[in-house]
Length: 224
Length: 224
DNA sequence: GCAAAAGTGTTAGGTCTACACCCATGT
DNA sequence: ACATGGGTGTAGACCTAACACTTTTGC
Image (cartoon, rainbow over all chains, first blue to last red; front, side, top):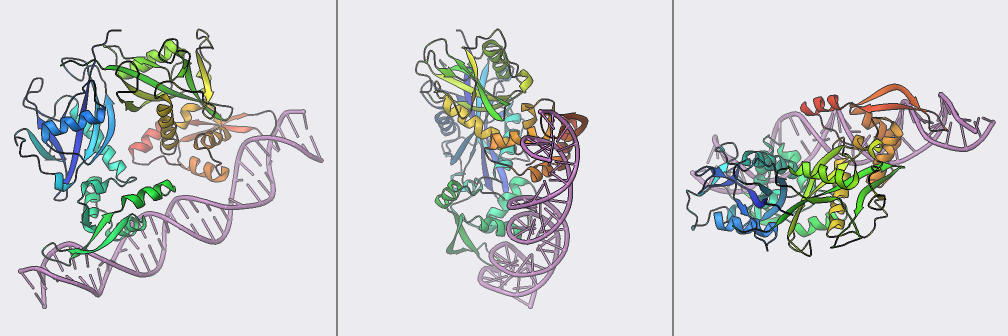
């Protein structure tokens, strides 16, 4: 059998800071779409798994190390790359603010964070991929505890609330949200406070992953 | 760039009859796994889309024409095929009972339906693919109206109820289920009855796809 | 007239939503 | 003392889950 399809991976990486969700994009060095912005990604090597390919490409192109990674969708339209047939397995990933800064090795001209409401024009079918990733993030954050992957290990409750508001694009009721989230029984309240300059200092919380998995195994589901 | 990865598609096709869910499997003609059962599938041609590849392979191998098709997941473990690196995009599909019979052209020895509780040993990582497909079917049937793709166009309400019971693997309350399902406002009750030999004849229903899409656009969601 | 499947309501408990005031700190 | 953000409770509406008898047909 003769087949000349090439296989690539692409990764939509989301970060959260200053109450907005951002996506990591790179500027293309070569044609097609030279100079245009694109989702990081590249061809899969013969010996590596798809996830390894994503992690390798992310490290090479942006210097970041991902925190959470899941497969999104495979894009296989024969016309999606103007030159060759390239089928791409898209992933979506989340990183914590502490890993948010791009590696010094990366030329700031080449990799940048973009707020999801202020996106540049994208290469290939990457706008479509990104749109799907955002939809998935919005859906998933309501039934799996992935929001914590976007926050530091210890966080004030208001950060979590603002994150949900940013992702879902709507206001949320502070009291009801807190009640429901704490009722899920997967957050540990620490004996530590943090002050944001003015206002009453906030208690810090941590996501208890073990407790979450235990509850999940018992059939108790996370849902906001 | 040198890359010798091959790309294939595989399709987990579900059917529903006699109150059980079945999967369509084929017997492999060649090594590896010669004589073993496998999910239908094959290599993607350079010029066709992934969906076209699935439909072509299904027609070639089993003679059936699918009713509903959606991408499931892409399996890319380097070890999944003992001979070459083959990355496979798995799909999951549903067919109506009227299309349930395998084409006469197909040797019954080569393609067969298996009740999902009585599966034979499978080739490659197909057991894993099938397991994922079942999980997806169970999840999806509760929040998208895909169950109707497994029934004839006109069906008695009890068929729908038994389908849900079969897919979810548990009993469902007849009264509550009917209330909720009819309350979604996507079923049309016909002026037609059907009798199953003994017992009171049942009214027939139809899924109203247009109404469903209209409601969906208005933000009203299907949920059981 | 009896066996078999279809059709139909009510109640109690739990969950969701809407909503406003006090608390702890910095300036 | 005032500005800022953190922390908390309740009542009404709504939804869910549990539960059993009557109706229509074939035999």
